[in-house]
Image 1 (tube, rainbow over the protein chains, first blue to last red):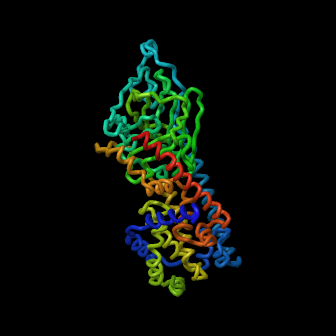
Image 2: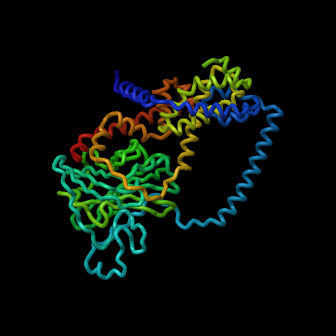
Image 3: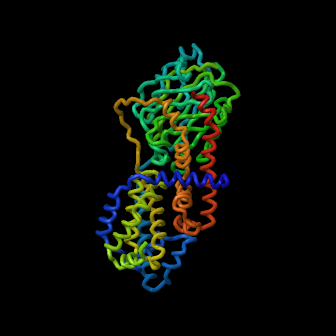
Amino acid sequence: MSASDTFGAELAAWLHDEAEGPVPSSALEHALRATSARRPRPALVASVASHWIMAGAADPMREVVRKPLTPSRVLILALVALLAVALAGGAILVGGRAEQRAVPAIAPSAAPVIPPASPAPTPSAAQSASSTPRPGRDASGKWPGPVQTLPEMAVQAMELRPDSGRLVWNDGRDAPIEGLDITRVVTGPPQTGWSFAIAGHPPEAAELDAADTVLSYGLVFETTGDGRADYVLGINSDAPVVGDYRVWITDLATGETQEQVGPPYGRPIEFSHPSETSNSRVMSFWFINGNVPFGSKVRSFYAWSALTRAGETVAWDYAPDAAWLSVPV
Amino acid sequence: MDQELVRRAATGDHEAFSDLATNAFEALFRTARLVLRDDDLAADAVQDALLSAWLHIRAVRDPARFEGWLRRLLIRACYAQATRARKHRTIELRVDELEVVGDATAEIEDRHARRDQLERGFLRLSLDHRAVLVAHHYLGLPDLEASTMLDIPIGTYKSRLNRATSAMRAALEADERSLARRQESLA
């Protein structure tokens, strides 16, 4: 048996296992109730209407159901076309009025705004700031982006778990939405993989209308020891294909972004998204084969999450707030 | 599939259609469950497909093809359900009660099983790719029948099946390549 056959057999076995399980008989009952209240459409109407159901170049049935255009069918088609034109005209009229009323304030953005690398914080800069932003917000109270723009960032030590050798940071509950609230951060060493727990199972990308709602998770890395963010990575639910993800990493010094939109994933960073497994609340990122593309070790980092609606980020979390998590180099 | 039942149903005999629907229901539901990966959506898709089948049953001239036609209606209903779910489901902005978070590290370790790898890989596929894999590996349909069910030319079906298989393999291989390193980094 070839590797391809083996894979196919394994996939088939898994699909059969996954298909098993109780089948809700109520769905059949509902369907039968719905059909009992209706009558099948007359053959002619059913044939005309079934073209949209059964259209397709490779459809052998199409030849079976296709009928020559008789005068009565031409009449029906003409009536349908007239109705469609009338509906389209009405829609244009109503849509035009609606467009005049609705003026979008902010265009939906494809990804959370990533600010350029900010200058190194200095005491004088902090002292001269006319309004010191609160942690996690800019001076206007809005989300500053994945990179926190506070004048100073504290450094928090992660707790070393002797039993596992892992480094852990407990962030507690500090965000209003469960699916955004990062409650615990876990990492190596070595610094090639990072995970964080979220308080609630987030919705799948397929459940979100990417034009309106974008859910993002990510990490910010500091690699040089100067206290400034050097790299930001994230995963967004706004890929063009519903249910896919956009995975990206930005070098803040150069502004260069690498991204993967939709499968196959793995580059620039592999991930495990909580919505990929039922009831999971863990988001993980890791570099395949440990190939960290920074050229240097991660010295400190923090995790972030954000919910963007209609182009405006309405909820977010950092773990920790206003601080780096230091890791042994 | 009993062709006589199809003929009777085509005359408006709802009892005959009920028998057809009952016979087909389980297979339809399991197929939709795989394609949509959501039992609620799958149930809705099957209901939609059966309703469409009943309304248009008089368009079926060859009872022998009823089963394939029904599967095709189901796939269309699956696409419609997926689109509907995407449009209508929203996140509620609310403050939830405090909830104890499970052990993150234990969850990570648990996901290393091969079944989870397959599940992750499959969930990452597009609906198009899931549907071709289900048609080929689960239903075991010949290429022509599968392409008809999916409403695509046979050439498109074959290339889509190749791409879906490659995408699935890529997802699994990425998992496998990283497994050792991930265990090392998180252990």
